[in-house]
Image (cartoon, rainbow, N blue to C red; front, side):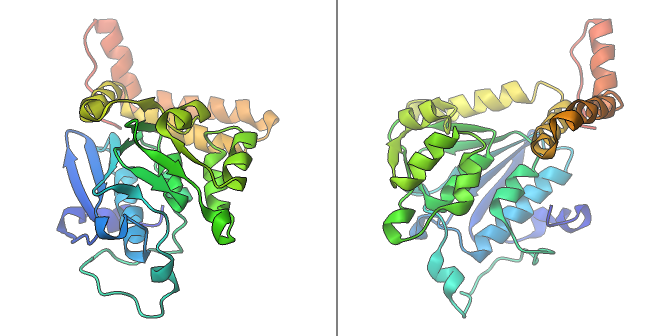
Length: 274
């Protein structure tokens, strides 16, 4: 992660310019709050996202993350004017600079916590990196998913990599090449969306999913997601040895000891995330 455990400790003391942060019952909810710019990502919102996800990653009391958005667009991608400007816009954000350049796809892959996109608005271009970085995507039927880059003479390079984690290669190439826009049902068929629900069921569905996830061992889930992430760089001969090593790591956690004890004693486990 781009921030150390020491750097993320004063999260509640910071002022955020473009995010609304809520921490409650082991859940961290991050709401994109730049609706006047369609929640387009400028350097400030990227920095705030990287910082908040690092906080979730390092904090054992955070067991799941939900990402939502204000306004009529979930995220319109990168704010190209902001990145191209030599004069950064004034900001109230107090988030410190990261140790290195922010690559949005990486900050999600290193989270190693369940991350749910709660979508009641459409997403375009680089906004796909947020959606593809989540473990679950719950969307309403009217949400659209669009990649217009080739219409502007650009190719969605980083988005392509994110999409390859959740979709078949042919579907990804077709999506990028034809500047496709699809509805939530088609996005679910392609593997981008986990579940499509009516607007009045969105809040309940996301909360039910969170409630289900946090009843299980946060340590097991965290290390499982870490293994899933790192498996991508392992060859076939390395994979089983690596996974055996990860199993030994899980068994040593306090949660594993608690889970086995609770099973033996026929009671519900009390997880600590350690």
